[in-house]
Image: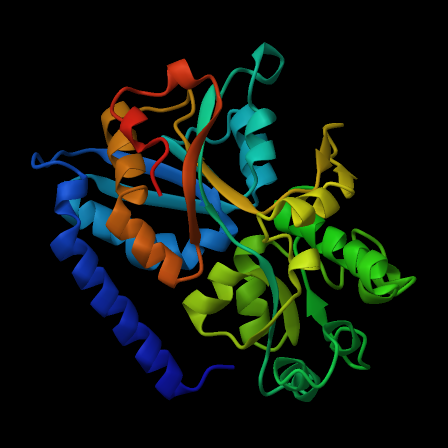
Length: 332
């Protein structure tokens, strides 16, 4: 668990970055302030970034009230379909989730989305736990990462593959490790069943469970561990699902997972998307938030926190993208 000194430094760093964002990012929104609430639903891996930095800075700079709600990307999509959630903006951790909300058969809740950032899987660990020594050995290149993940006493946490992209990506990581490093049975030894109740936790609570000692390691995105100062080991590009190189993307595409809806998801580099669904109640505020998130300065700050920038591309119907946002396409 982080020391009080580390937590103090983390708090001061967040305060400093927040101040810089408020001071310098007003031009990203335009000169005229506005009012009203912008309801943003987002992948749980963005909790700290959205709640500590982007959301407050957006509210201070724009005049809008920011209201954030986190959850697994698939769970958010299900809430939208079930008319439980009516977000103005949605950020998913997998472009494929948007497709579950597209088309008349899916309620046409989403007609377009912008892919704007990437990340990779890492293993975060509790530095005070009995298993930490093995992870430190991996950091020092003295032990293969998969050996640390098979040590006695490891209590690992992950998210639900049925409702969260990180959950099925964790399974892909294990299967790719089996394939690339010839570690037969690695997935079963590490995870047991896909829905192993001793390991599977809601995305928005997994970090807290590790920091409080309920698990001593967890599968996270790079942005999560960097934002909170959690010690971690990196994984090779061939298994971390973070590489955009063609040879790695082809390897990722050998992996598949079937969701409860029947949709078959295919492995691909980890990418984040943002869109304005048909449930939007505040179109102007929603567009202002998207412009803010995709502004050059915010993206630079997000990249420093592990949410790495990509050239912005469009999925779905490009003609449906609001005119105020089309200028963002192709930017990085």
